[in-house]
Length: 498
Image 1: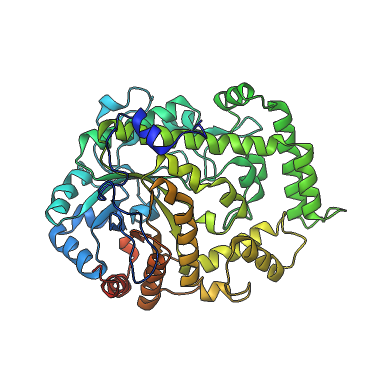
Image 2: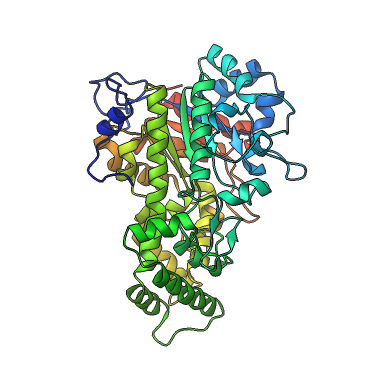
């Protein structure tokens, strides 16, 4: 696991990156970014955009990249080059295959049982999308980041199943919110092989890795947006690799399983509206006192993921020291105080060049209300929804619309500023950049707040007021109204960055 005493400099040294500037695109010795609106932060100036595959695989790239720069001030591409999720690929579910939309070079995958067919996306035939876009992007002065989105709705094929987590009943957990196991050497071999493949085989300008998951303890609670129906009996991971690691750390595996068994029953009772004699929260806290192994297991999960992130960082730096490596941060960090506690940006800063927290303020209204509904199924069950929302706002330091209104209003630009500033404060000691993910037409259910050009503009301005040194326009170019994308460009022009 990452050593608490390590500094980012020591990590870089371990990766043979001596002499590298703290951030790509910023010379050593330059001042740290400021935060005042009239003194914009200095950094890489990255204005990225997330992109599904159809435009990159089928459209005239010269015209496409000109439009991206003209409308949104874009100078960096974040293609979903590896994804098994049709929504991020920007493709219909029917007939979608997914996987690696570049060419897997098999010499890098000797530590995994997966073969070429298990990895390769066949949706565009033999086309190597990465090879197609990079030279045209460079001609337009645009950087290209390899973005590995690890999350799968379910195991993509039978060959993948042996890489997946196991629940505390001993069953393979082959669907979201579970996923591949961070302590399984077969999965580690795949991830590190994929990262090495992209870094050595393509002239990329950076790497961003994404995991929109959490450990089994919080999954059992349904502690995420739309998590009210999560199966509390599917908590992970209890594979042989995780149980061995737990034993080596002094965690009692059998007591952990008993704790998860009691947690499962407690969650099921709560969801059936069977209020415990001492209330929901008191009984929950008593469960933690009786089984501290529950939190120990969650901590094992998050530290195992950090260990993989450290390996990714060191691997990239050992090959191309100058290119930045960073992390997409799941939107759940904006709703769940539990997930926020375990997503410690100051820890990530020790092996990061940038972080990209998802700050989708328009979609956040519906999502934060959904989180409250999920949490009221157990931990927040003592509170009516309006009070539960108020407590959550106080815990997260938000000043937003109440439970009855937030879905239709979304969260404000002030939320974007506060969350950006919080991230900047946590990572500035390590010289790490913060590039917030800005909501442009992220899909929402009926009756939810709708994106507007001015709303996008205000979110961009707020991010820079919070100290951002760049942005990633999100979630997917294929979903964006061009007029709304132009709202980002208008904000950049107003700031003198367009």
